[in-house]
Image (cartoon, rainbow, N blue to C red; front, side):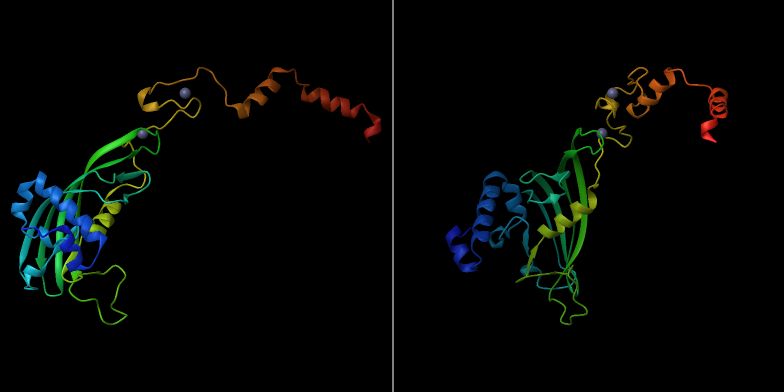
Length: 237
Ligand SMILES: [Zn+2]
Ligand SMILES: [Zn+2]
């Protein structure tokens, strides 16, 4: 059922991307036969996140559903918090043909890894991200209607990767916290305050005030005395 990888590359003339896609699909065939049974379209895909909509025939109402386990592509999130490249993503997808194009609706579950911006504690959480995006059959002809955000089918192929990337960026917080009330780090010793909420450093004084406290310990001439000193000095007049 699967043509040799070399044939696929040559016939589709897309090159390396297709070859890599075929390799990944072969991996799926070996490891997850259930996926193959549910999804007879694997042979035409050029990657695990590319879906062929030829069979839907642009007929409004036509629908296909997919359940797929894939490896996370790169750049799924922020520097401080992201779905690690190559980690497992469980994807549920429904494709639905409407008048203008194919509506892709679904969710994916993944792991998001990063660190708390307040206390630097590692964060490793399961996230479920929803998305819905319309893929147009044709790019809008007039310049005014065209939008940079538009997704357009290419040769009836739908590339879901940018949709997942946008969805995860919207779903993940920019400033991840280990918990909603993370107290952060002790400004004096750097200890994680959540581990030691009653943290104290005795009577320690802020260094900015320590100079003042030294002054306070020295005897200061009284106000009366200094006034009388000035008054008794005729040279100052
Ligand atoms: Zn924290
Ligand atoms: Zn401390």
